[in-house]
Image (tube, rainbow, N blue to C red; front, side, top):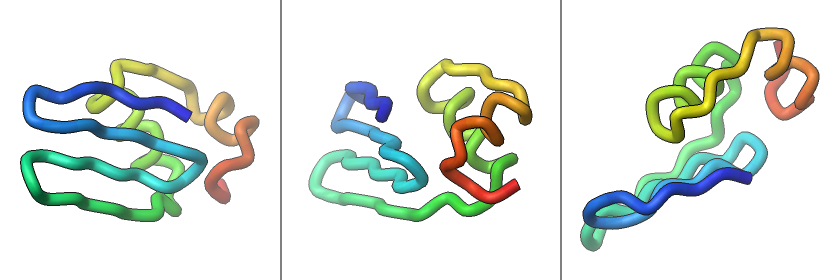
Length: 62
């Protein structure tokens, strides 16, 4: 699980479930693509993992 406080809300990633709250709006999505998972970790949370690292997590199918 990873989360970050945003200027107007919060974003979190728990296993493959991504949630983001900004103002009064909430977005939820299940991430099924390992490339999208890596990109979300990197761009939203500042965490860089290799494709092998993500595969080892077993969260999304490679």
